Image (tube, rainbow over all chains, first blue to last red; front, side, top):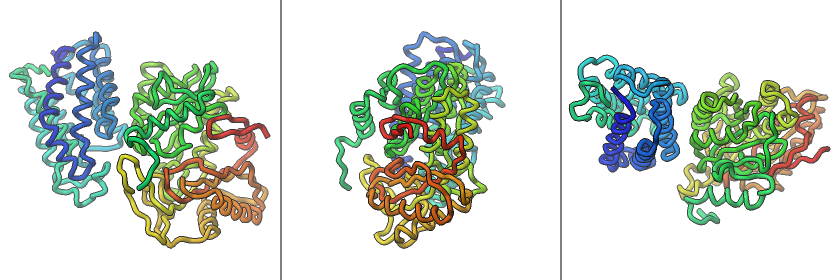
Length: 209
Length: 336
C-alpha cells in the first residue's frame, strides 16, 4: 500500500537522485536552454520533501497538492510548473484516501498527465517530460509483476527517444531542426523520477512507492 | 548595456518596494508578499474582484492599474516570466469579496497555464467562483481567423477600465464578464519597435533590430512581428497601423472611439504627440469622434523604443464606463 510514509520516502529518493544528477542536468539544459534545469529541479524537490517532512497531514490529496505547491514556489520555471501540475492532477484523483494501491496510483498518475496536457496544451512526441511520463505510467498500469521496474525502463526508453524528436516548446523550439539529436532534459528528469521510485529496494514487486 | 540598477537579482523586488513606498495610500502587498499587489484598505463586500497578472518589465502594465475603478489585485512574475500559480491563488483570494472573481490577463502560455491551475484550486478549495477573459488585441500576432492565439498588449488597459468600472458599479460577475467581453471585441492594437530591450539578468539584448530598420508588429517581449522594414516617417507608420486596424474594426462616420498611443519605453512624448496628431487628422476625415485619448506609457517593454496604437470602438455603455472615475497609481480619471 502507498501511504504518507511511502510518499515521503518516494519524494526523498527522487530528490536524492536529482541531486546526484545535478551536473548532468545542467549540462543537458545548456545545449539548448539556460542551464538552470538542475538547480530548479533540485530546489523544487527539496522544498516538496521539506513540506512532507514537517506536515501532520495524512490525506493523499492534501499531501500531493501541497507538495505540488511547495515545488511550484521553489521552482517556478516551465518544467517546474509542469511537474507541479502532474502532482496536482495526482492529488485530485486520490480524494478521500489515506492510502492506495499501485493500480490506484497508476490511474492517479494518469490523471496527473491529463492535467499537464490540458493546462500546458502539450502531448507526447513533442520532446518534453511527457515523453518519459506517458510510457512510464502506461507501463505502471499494465504490468502486474514489478510494475515500478517496468515503469522505470519505459521512462528511460521514452527519454532516450526524445533524441529523434524536434522541439516545439520553450527555448529549445528556437533551435528547430537543430534540436534533433539532443536528449531532452525534461524527459531525463522524468526518467530519473521513475528510476528513483523503482529503486525501492525489492519493494517494487508489492507496489510500494 | 547601461541600466540604473543594483543587483539584477533584486530588480523586481526593489521596483515593487518603490511602488508601495510611493503609492502606499492606494496599494499594498497582500500578506507581505512582494509579488501580490492589492488595493489598500478594506474590501467592498459583494463586489466582483478583478485580478490580473503577468511577467514584470512592462510598467505601468500590469500592476499600475490596481486601484479604485480598475483592478483589485495584480500578481507579478519575474521579468518576462509568468508568476507561479500559488501566487495567482493568493491574488484571487485577495480579490474575492464574495461575488466571484474575473481573471483578466494577456494571452501568454505561461500566464494561461498558471492562472488556470490557480482558478481550479480556488474553485475547489476556497469555493470562489472564478472566470477568465483574455486580452488578444495584438492584430500583428496572428491572422483574424486565429484570433484566440493573438497576444494581449496595451489594449488590455481599456478592458481593465471597463471591467473595473462595471465591478465598482456592483454589477454581478456575469454582467461584468458580458460587458468586458464586448469591450475586448472592440479593441485592436498594433505597434512598431525600433530598438530591442534588455532583460537585466541576461545583461545584453536577446534580439536585434538593424540601425535603419524597424520591426512591424513586434511583441512586447521581442516576439516576431509581421515584417522588418526600413524606418518610416511618423505619418507613414500611423497610416499603416490605422489601415490595418480599420480592416477589423468599423471606423464609420458618426461613430465614437477611444485611442491609445503607447510609448514602448524609450520613445519621447513628443513623438507620441506627432503620431496622435496624425490619428486625429485621419479620424476627422472619416467623421469619427475620439473620446478620451490616452497618450503616454501604458504598456512598455523596458527600454524598447517604438509605439503601439490601440483603437477602442465605443457604444453608450462602454463610453460611460470608460469615463467613470478611477484612481490608481498610474491611471487617474476624474469625472468629466
